[in-house]
Image (cartoon, rainbow, N blue to C red; front, top):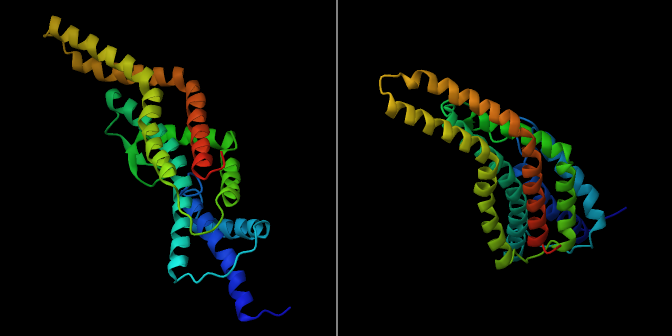
Length: 259
């Protein structure tokens, strides 16, 4: 086999642009983008493997100079699409993290922080606990496989080219960020309500009998009640989190024009 210069550049171009989109998503998506779970070399190797598998199924592409204006626009498209798809899934995990943080504050565990394995940041210990549970749920519903399927389908609905996300797609992406607060509140609502009622009861007792040292028993009581409520309401995390993930995938398909 022999290649001339133009054929070789066209071959490199055919693999380069899909690799940018695939690697961008894998570097920032949940689980795959976690340095503590998947090393960078493994992510890079996985991106290369998926690129080699996907490119032969795509229409032949002509060579585009990466340093030209058209090449820079195509590069921006691949980066934006990769980040957009990963961002929506990250928001689903951020909602779970916010739910844990909302519970930890009234429980008195807001000062107890540890490193989140997905983001590498210091977050309340309950947020880390809920994030780990969410990660296990995501794997149990084959969310990682669906994410890869969505990534491959994006090349069919929005092929490599100079076309960027539409204004409607960007608006959907921004609006869906509100799911962080809605999902986090729904996850934390039962525990927050019960702990708030307990704090109100202690406040009434303190007002009725100021000589009682309510604070000595208030802290362990609210913490114990919080753990009990988390234990009782933890099964409800699966349908809440599954709904968030499904909504994120539907939004991704809507943004890339596949649904």
